[in-house]
Length: 145
Image 1 (tube, rainbow, N blue to C red):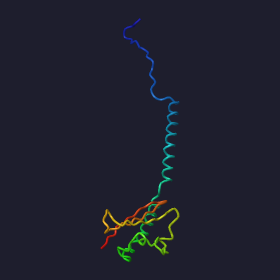
Image 2 (image 1 turned 90 degrees about the horizontal axis):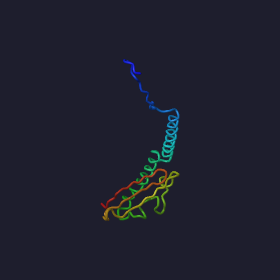
Image 3 (image 1 turned 135 degrees about the horizontal axis):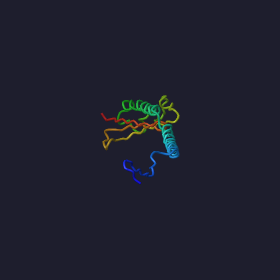
Image 4 (image 1 turned 60 degrees about the horizontal axis):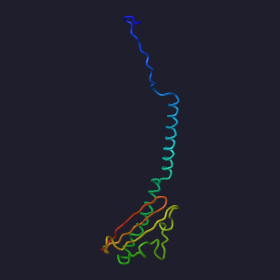
């Protein structure tokens, strides 16, 4: 019977809103596993990367060798400045300069001379490469004048 003035209520099943405790715990566990993986990878990347100090050391070694090589151009002249004589550290007799004999562990320094620059024999290119813990490369162009 329907009485006037009274409302008839219909009971619908309630939809679940929000998260249950189990869903929340699973979400937290998944986020923790993903975060741990990302942080572990980031930490490994940082410990394996070259530091600024190592890069600076490599550049310093390259600069030292270049400063030893460039005066050879004035001393030997352009024609005497050859692959056999340009680097005092490798020319015979070998130099006893500290630059040549005290290279820190983990580094190696090499120097090369190209007899022309872009096909022009009036120029020579000196390249000093440092490899190892901190890598660097330095180039200089010398001219015949």
